[in-house]
Amino acid sequence: MIAMRRRKAPPLALAAAMLITTGCSLTPEYVRPDLSIPSHWDSLLSVHGAIPPKNESNEAATPLNSDEKEFLREFDPGSELVNLVASALRHNPDIQIAALRVEEARASYRVQNAEGLPAINLGVQQTRQQFNDSNLNERYGQNLATSGVGFSGYELDFFGRLRSLTESARHGYLATRYAQEAGRVALIVETGRLYVNCLAATDLEETLHGLFDDEQSLLAISERQRQIGVIAEEDLRSQRTAAEQARLRWQRSRSDYAQSVHALQLVTGYATDDSPLPGKLAALTPGSATSENRFANRSSDVLIHRPDVMQAEEKLRAANADIGAARAAFFPSIQLSSSIGIASPSLHGLFSSGTGTWLFSPQVSLPIFSGGSNQANLDLSHIRKNIAVFEYEKTVQNAFREVADTLTAREQVVDQIAAESRILESEQRKLALATKHFDAGWIDKNSLLAAKILCGEESLRRIEAQRVLAINWLYLYRAFYGVRVTS
Image (cartoon, rainbow, N blue to C red; front, top):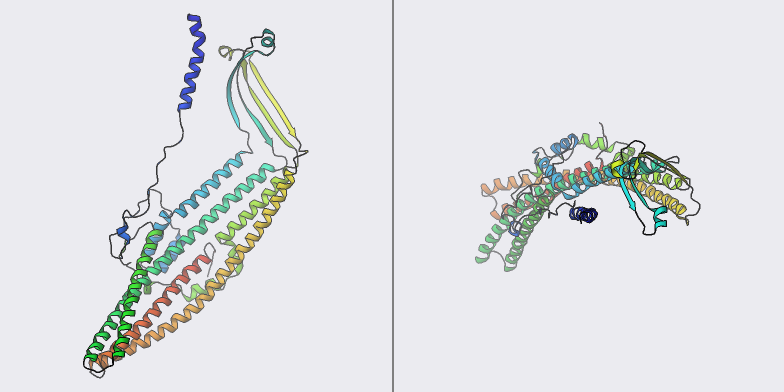
């Protein structure tokens, strides 16, 4: 009975080991990500509602570099924009995904680079095979324990297949790096644009509120005049229509302001509340004559250093390297397998003297017939390279057009804001003169309110011109991002 139990013990131990092994799981526990949104709808339903909670991310912040900080502080001397952009870089999911794409490409490059080195493994194996037929058992039966160190299937890269694949992976990794930079500047400019829109919406709301008050004052005067028969009923209706239109414009401006704030909150991870921003649109400094000439008087060749252009070029380099790998598939493949170790009929005698063993197995494989797959892969590599060439040319052309359009638009908006400033200054002088005449009793209140309304309407056009100029400067910064521009 004891002997029988000993014979049954190994299967039981093996079964227990299998249960323990299959019972283990290396899969990490799933945890649903936190939602980066306010906890209640009420915080977003009104301009002056509850302050939405700020999203506190555990991820490390992506710091702004010195050039980015210099530009943002020069653009917004109050430095509020610097904090908003830093928060956007910290919370924006697209930036986080771009950073992970870089890490993914880096890991892929390391994996491909490791293909050029032999993978050395340590192995221990015991083989037991018995047959009931004595003849078969005498010929094929075995009881062998082995242990050794070696490598298997190591390819000698005589024709550069592995080198080409590694080069392709390296350029693919660099392309993701430049894609991350392109996404980064796009987020910086988008945050700046939303910030400018918020400042402009604040000024527009204040100005339209003043215009509505002036129209209401005119309506009250018109109603009194109608009561005493000074004006006709048609004139009163016209003034009521003007007052109602002013009210609708003011309400739309409040809605536009709320939408601008919500968009800025979304892109910055709700780093701001819905109260008016401390900055002023007029305080922004969207460039100077020196900086404009610095951008405009440069050769178009500097655009090849833009992140999106560099990304397209790295993709072209990767496609070019893939051709080398496809060509190498037509040549012989030489692989080596080798190991050194010990072997014994039983485990307890594995480390006895005279048990050494070694293996050396070279293999040469020459492709004779592959059904045309090698030629098809080579043709595919050439086609993909041609596509990459046209994509590179398209990216360069789009970059040139973007710069040209931005510079052209800047000339127009600079002329526009200069004209609007002169007109506004003239209306302000008229308003100041009308105020003096009203105080002296030379004109009635209707004339004073009409002058105020004309000045307010011109202020609206000036605010819009300032907004367009500020956004144009942000676009110009994006067009030359990554380009070393010296004065």
